Length: 425
Image (tube, rainbow, N blue to C red):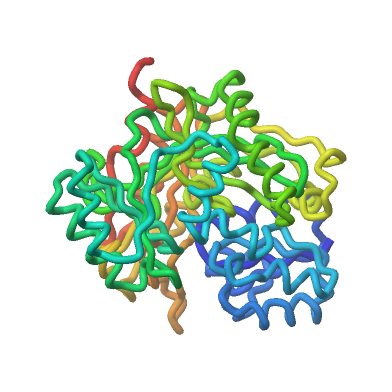
């Protein structure tokens, strides 16, 4: 099988590792990839937002399966464009991708299909939104309607902060094409990232993880795309998985198919375990980053064949797979200034030391090599340090051993990744 992997982050590095190890893969191309993926695949400098260029590349290279990492390509309709060329795509159509690209669409969809979620209102003007806030209680949850790279959600503790967030989101591009925002009820409980593979008709549980959204220790600071993650999650026991599949995932897949927009790909449900049961916080239509990395660190099977079964609508005949009983923990190493204004171009040393850590994995995210071959930062979230162990404590320890092997004065990370998992239940 000839596979094209779209994207350039840590998620894509993890996917590249798993695809390279898939017995069914005969050739792997990544566009645009990153320095870590360079040893696993042929890199082609086509950006993830360049749908026309990616389709042309897939045609020329006679690609059998395109695996899409980032949501921007899916929201731009890459699956639709590939379908016109009869090329299989692991990822939803543009219409189905609205489950992520429009929070307002998803909230209305949930209400229409009895999928448990938080109460909400949608606003297109700051005047009406600000007036509505006066009737709410803290904490306030304000979300940009459109894609915002994980940074379009504000949980404000005071009315003043909430009003500032409303004004900022509606005055910027963060709200997407509709320039709308969603204000919703704050849900209390433990959060879980829940993944299901979907073929347009069927859904299959594909693991759970927990991540850390806030930039700094103690869950302080601004929301980010994710500063760390771990898997498995104790809360995701068989009864919980069965309940979520029956009340949230399968009803979504069925309703999307009935609406003429069958969902193909991975459905990532951000869930809150409330006192009355799991509720949907939001949907993403691709693997989470950094959750994907800890899931794949435990994955055992032919990933490419599994994703092809989804893309072809044959999940009922998918090859068997499993997750090892090991635990995996990931620490994001970010550039100083992230998420607002990350410092780019700083040199990173110690890569080889990090690669030699027992039970450790180093993934590239926002990196590049200069003309002399030196590794430099080129984004906000720059490296992923992963530890795998027989229990969560060992996994966390090994992840930080990878971190400590890196010499990068202009980088930072949280030092409390996995703290929830270490608390006796």
